[in-house]
Length: 235
Image (tube, rainbow, N blue to C red; front, side, top):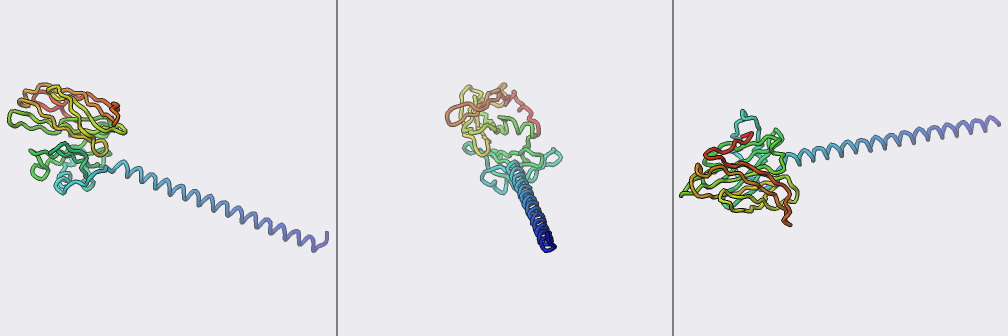
């Protein structure tokens, strides 16, 4: 091989080596770009998951409800997010509002003809995460005596998918059905004859039902015991 041929071969090897290095750098940049894109996508998905877990869909609550949630006493162990408050369910002249809290669950305010957030604010009631995550939770959130009758308001939520209505048996034995509102929340106004102390113990089985009549979840709850409402954790 002549010196010219040797130089040409050497140069060709240098060019080939330079090309291999350039190709390697290009592959590394592509891998880094792909990795960065994956990290960004993961971050966006994580942020979306957090947003989904801390957001309740529904019509924004009126200022009186937002103000009421804002008056919640932090000493009770929860920190509601008043600005996220929304209307989640209603039964005639009774409306249920909900908001998220910093503890990972939710808080509720009930508006009834005898107790409105703008006239009798109480800060609302917050549920611990363990109770908020139940397939079907329910409790008596309000009671009123008038004209020889007692009106109890049952409020709660179901996490069952495709739920449409809830059913429950009243103290008189009647079965009532109420629609499920936003994000599985529901509220039911129940009227019974006599005074609240005369109702005795009211334990009922509540069922979450889909549009085809299939029962998706059930829960048996003690909603009233004589003159005393059963205690609910977090209230």
